[in-house]
Length: 191
Image: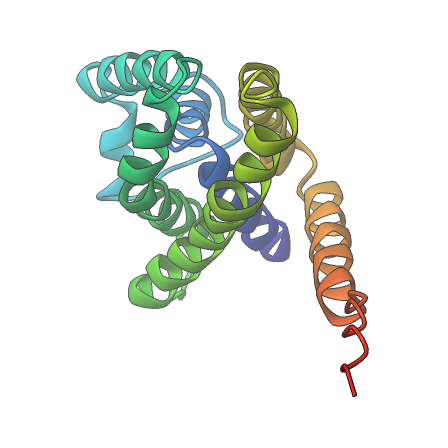
């Protein structure tokens, strides 16, 4: 059903906001070895061995770089450009299964979704983890992000409705917290 493909596209691009290469690699491998995904031109290039090899190599680099103190912060800066791009690519590649989706619209949607997830991760979650744990929590959080990216990538293809519900739930929680965030009262003015 066409609506499920758009749910997949949103889930995969959100996953790219956590780890740029995992959803691309999942899509490439599933398109190559299963009938779950049929990539159209030019996106079917992702199923070639050299692209899969590059994605594996880049996944390993990102995995390791995100676990090394100080390097992980540089990695997040570099990934500020890569993750939204990966989200745009994976959204466009999977949304083309729907039919008449404008490629520019698909690229923009993927860019915004992945960029939004990356921004929350890099600007809010990771600094809070670093500040509250003295950096000791960064490795477990990074591993959890990689695991979440992998699980969301597979679920986006296998159970796209579940991923759509999770994305709506998480977005609702974030927006609700932003709207109803308690403001600290101002101290009384000295008279």
